Amino acid sequence: MSITIRLGNPSDNPRIHDLISKITMPGPAELCFQRQPDFFIGAKVIGDEHVLAVAEDAERPEVLAGLTMISGRTLYINGQPRRVYYSGDTRVDPAYRRRGIAGQLFTEQKRHRSTEDLLQGVVIKGNTAPLDAAANMADGILFQYWVTHTIETSFLFVRKQTPRIPAGVTIRAATAADAPQMQAFQDREAPRRHGYPVYDFQKLMAGDPYYAGLRITDYALAWRGDTLIGMLAGWDQKAYKQTRVMGFKPVVQALRPLYNVYVGLVGGFKLPPVGGALNYLTLYNVLIANDDPAVFQALIDWMMAHQGQRYDALATAVVHGDPLVEVPRGYKRQKLLSENFWMSYGEDPRPGMDGRPLYAELGRL
Image (cartoon, rainbow, N blue to C red; front, side, top):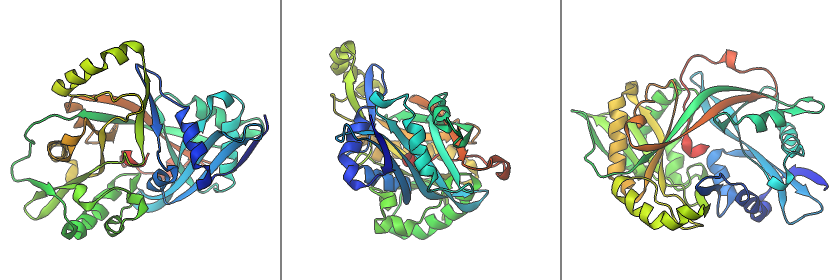
């Protein structure tokens, strides 16, 4: 084995997909988080600049032994726009694990960042061992990280019901004519949370790759009279980002048809055949004036009654401690806990952050 680390490029796409397909989440249904057909389309949704490091084995040129990516995007920190670099998509071929490859990949990435940069990442709750292994190289500490928040992702099972809309509030789909008010609302409300992305609705409508597959008409807007008081979008990302079923335990395979009939009646994820993808819609750009839970619930209900009827579930993420965290808990759902961490090649960034809540944009993780 002779491992070489270099920067990746679009010609690596076939080998990237081969590597990703080898890394699955076990369970009754074996799942894989894929980026078909073009890894780099999904990369442009995560950020607008990238450092992709890949590991090659000279003895097996047909495969990649591993990869990791840092993506730059502009987020609000302390109420001000700041470049933040998201560290994600770290994958090591199971055949090459415990050989220090992740650390070598992060060493290459470090060459392209400074000690002043703020980095962010997300891991499944309690699963920081790979970070520890990558951070502690034989010749010293490569980087430091600090787990700060629990992120509660909810897959809200779609059902048919009349949206629960508070008195005096109306909800409708957005149009291009609403973009100026939406931008003003975004610019006012988003800085109230750390980590909220800086969005430009003119770029969205112009087809910027940062918003791939998203349209202004995918937004639901909540109004009180002529005042915009809440918004969110339903973002279908299946064209470049899938949770794919790679296999079933035998008993699940045998019962799958009956199970799908059952969840069709009571709500839940229908299990596609092997090779199929779970069918969910990601709730995106959630902004609620005064953090009013009734308005957030009304927008979820409205989305579920409209675009959501084509899906098994709506996916949303709220950080523990956020004023809106209880709203998704009121739905029949499937829950996944993960953790936000800040990462640095220099000093601990936490003392420089105030007490604002953290926002997690599920569609950009």
